Image (tube, rainbow, N blue to C red; front, side, top):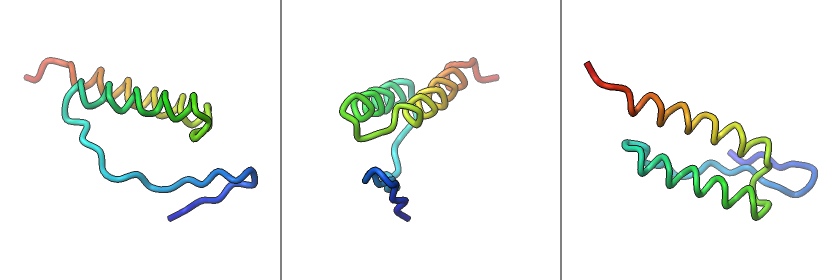
Length: 65
């Protein structure tokens, strides 16, 4: 699935990423940040992704009962 935008950006599905621990999640947050800084990812989308990743990391750090 590709979504083409009027300004030439294309949204392509990424390969499955491993988010099984906090280091993996932080690495993905860094990747999102770098893509937003370089203009390959819309800032609004990056903000949403970082928010979702921050929620995942919060949940992953909860004590497991």
